[in-house]
Length: 429
Ligand SMILES: Cc1cc2nc3c(=O)[nH]c(=O)nc-3n(C[C@H](O)[C@H](O)[C@H](O)COP(=O)(O)OP(=O)(O)OC[C@H]3O[C@@H](n4cnc5c(N)ncnc54)[C@H](O)[C@@H]3O)c2cc1C
Image (cartoon, rainbow, N blue to C red; front, side, top):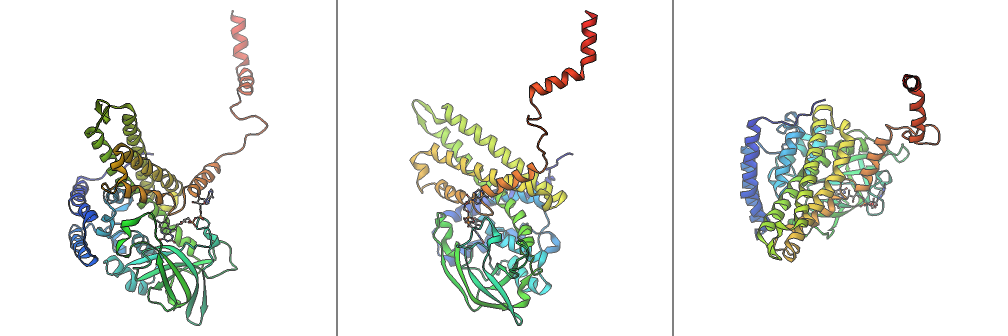
């Protein structure tokens, strides 16, 4: 089967525009000392330009209100956006809004789309996804305990969530809650849309994390208490008991969008690594002339190339066969990409010495963000387990006590197989 990641010249021109725009207009946001009102005025003017270029909310197909680029093209665009933490907001596809808009588009009723999806896509509302709980292992979501009980025509929700990204500033949250405790482990949960001003919803705090600066203006990971929160029955998103199904639909493409953004982050760190290697001198020659540094450059280039091809390949499978067919490839790139991101930034910090460790460069911030990549959307270990299980399903244990490739056994079999010819050869002599 041929793989085709090629894109037409018109699209390449769009990517070129994006590269210039992100470098010239978005990078300066990272270092701008402004209050929220001033900052958002600038962001809104950049968003207007992005909309004019028809590059807004590119993660959704046209029938769902987006531009319909598909995952391969999206991958190439996210790669550019991923270089800066602020670019996804400028381009209207930042997590968790992008994933939430996808599930609202796929599973929402016309009324839910009208009230939540359209304003979300227009950038008038902000959202959060509330699943992880402090008292249960998020790696195993069958342990979820936040419960919703249908009383009359209202859901009454009680529970404790945390790491609800953007929870403090969201206008609505999509909560994953247990609605059917007696059903099978993957049919117990449902998703419910909870307006941020619903009575009983308590936004406790933004949990201080390693991320630091990006959490300004309330972006961050919130602890949320649901205390007899009441929402109308029609706020159920999709079917009752379909929470896991919807979560899969959300997290599959969502995960690969993160992997795409990491490519851009890694590339930016790599560029810094190479430039510093050519600039700084030690022991009578440029750092770039020291073999260890050359190894870092070669290893980083190889790992980034592998991550890029794996990401595009997974994207291509989603485009041609659907997200379910790409489960293995998405898990592979999720843990591999997170490691590549971490290692490239780590080497870039090392080559800069104490300057790399300082906040005078963006590397230390990139490093802090990269650490989280190994946890959100499922820790590395869980993805490795999932990949290994899928691979092992295609194998069988060989019969008997020896491995299939056992040389003495094969030698015996080979002798038997060619016995007649071997016999003839002896006779000929
Ligand atoms: C920056 C950031 C943003 C986040 N945003 C959101 C959000 O918006 N909404 C939301 O609901 N959640 C969010 N999360 C939470 C995230 O999804 C969870 O942290 C993740 O699912 C892991 O759950 P946990 O933290 O409870 O870790 P646990 O489940 O307690 O796991 C701890 C560790 O156990 C190990 N482990 C687990 N399973 C296995 C296994 N099978 N084999 C070997 N080792 C294993 C892993 O090393 C894992 O890191 C976010 C997290 C971060 C860091």
